[in-house]
Image 1 (cartoon, rainbow, N blue to C red):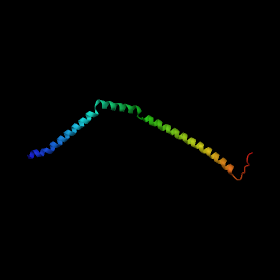
Image 2 (tube, rainbow, N blue to C red; image 1 turned 180 degrees about the vertical axis):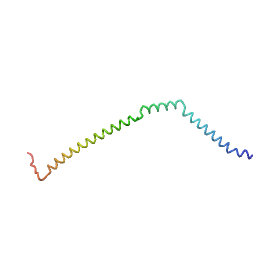
Image 3 (tube, one colour; image 1 turned 120 degrees about the horizontal axis):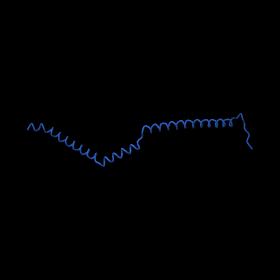
Image 4 (cartoon, helix red, strand yellow; image 1 turned 60 degrees about the vertical axis):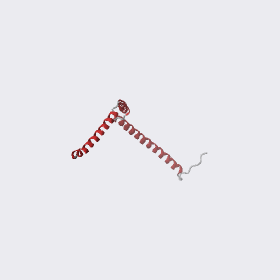
Length: 103
């Protein structure tokens, strides 16, 4: 009897291991089913077509740099125009140079 009780925990562990192994085999069989493989293949192909490449990233960075330069240029032009308008308004509002009403 002593011998049987010493092997019981080992047998229990072996049975648990066998069940887990069977579960893993079942999960693997389901994941390797032909319809699942077809779906996986379709998704990989879709990613290959729609995936972002290094060239795409580089083109985007160049385009962003070009746009940033254009925005800087437009900002400088607008600032110059604003300075001209501000200067003209200050000239008109200068009390040292009274203006007569037109007409």
